Image (cartoon, rainbow, N blue to C red; front, side, top):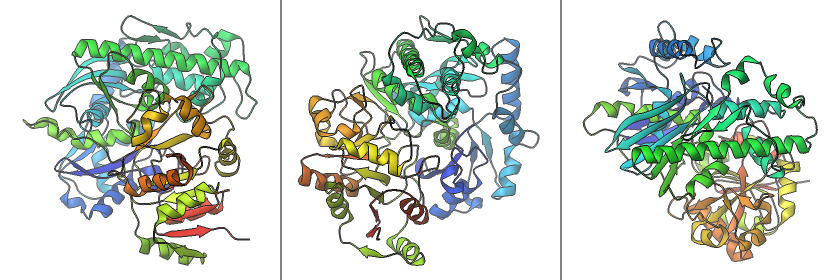
Length: 544
């Protein structure tokens, strides 16, 4: 399991959620989420002895071993577990996670193991607002699953079908990510960004085929050849990290993204047909593939779609926490997630104490949104730190680096001097939802930056720094009543420039998690080429 996290709920209401990486500062931290659990307790004022259930988004050791053994005997997985699986098994073997939790946090009366895909499925369905839904979990792997189809109805959940490991889109994408010189289970979004630069022509049929109801991945071949299967098939060695990218690499990325999109689309169409419901929920790490998501959202077999903003393993905690409700007659509490700001927040007093401790020059301002908008309109790059931190991998206007999307130079400047990343990586726009129809071809509501759409002609003209080479963009639509301060910033920028959009990227440096605390924000600001930091009710600028 990657991206460990914790959340806490009361009577079905989600109170707090945070990934362990944001506190440990170890990106994609997969250890036991001790810090995240403590943060949930501290931020809500709940003591460990008040917790009724502690739920782990993984099956019990006995269930896990049985599922693995059955999968091996059926020839569905190799006998050698993949990296990361053994570490989790060791964490939960013998006395299991309960003892580990009690050693780290405190005594607990009920410790529940919840299947990994079941946790993902709950996390998508319970927060979708749909009473009836088709749920598809696209994952690298669970205990033995790679993809699963579920039907949610009246708060209950029924598993319809499972595609077992290693027949996995996540595995396919990860192995080709490594072949292209990036880190598997970490840099897949880089490959997604690279794909539009390629052209058709690479035949992936030795490793991937569409079927009538889904896909078939040559997972055993990819695993058993220790990374040699792909070079052996194409006669081209794997790219070493840091080597230049050429047309072959770009074309492989293009073919891989097409395969992933086609496979996901085929499974969702099958799922809708089998469940009879066209309201679709998706979760799992592969469900972060915004390009495929955008295609699926606009198909004629999907009426409405909800993709949980923390779709990867960090978001499985949201499902595990609600699993006990499946034991009750009423089933899961169904709500509509509109607010992803579930993490730690800091008062202006906290922020000023940090700024003073570093002996920084700063000014208190009456309206941070106006201050930020004026600087963005002047062409500055602004660090924006406000309110509670987002849950999930995307910065959605509370831990963001912002720029003017109307200038193409903004993209190059942020890539080179702020994010220190590859020049071909795209950026995303935050758009006032009222104007989404003018700037996006198909999507008018995308609050979690998890769908890709084509820009309209106006969108391409007005926000070129947030448009990818193929004319696509990964938007966040911003609603006034969900994030009023961020909405006001964008509206103030619109009043000054005529553009109801800002370029938004996560507030972090390359290879680091998104900032959580004022200290993180100050350190990142002074380690990069940002011009101004607007943090709470204060503005910090660089001098000299």
